[in-house]
Length: 100
Image (tube, rainbow, N blue to C red; front, side):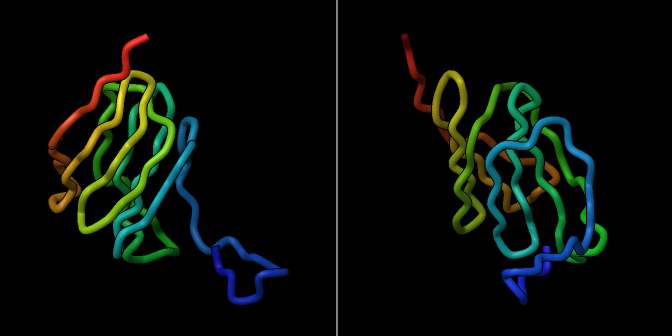
């Protein structure tokens, strides 16, 4: 999105996703939660042509906060931390389980 004029946002590029929920961007990597499809890392180095880098589909996700190449992701069964310094292979750092 081009938000230079906040009253007139413009689409810059597109990438089809299954069920996007929360998202956050860190430098040129966008992390998107996709509900039952887990989360995706997407290159937005060229905003006109976003490219899927990786998909982790082992959990249901809702929202994400990124900082310093770490994604904190809320999911159905817990809170996850993933290191995505290599966005092609995000690495699980920790999980805090939520029990009902």
